[in-house]
Length: 87
Image (cartoon, rainbow, N blue to C red; front, side):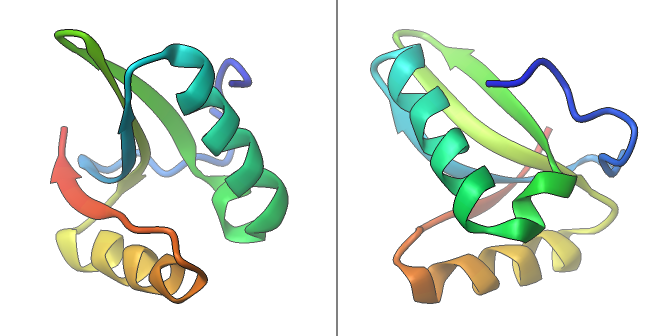
């Protein structure tokens, strides 16, 4: 995953979680795929959150829960599931 997309990344507390993986490589691969295939993802900050033995791939930070929900809803028709989480 690219280090940080800090200059244009939103700074709110809400994120969308795109998956949970057993390896960092798989999480990074999904982010790379989404960043290439979904132009709206390029403006988001990726977060790789370690939770025990799992790596959670999240993107954000959205200013509101509703904004994160709208972003999630745009991804679902393409087959990419996601959930809204607060950091």
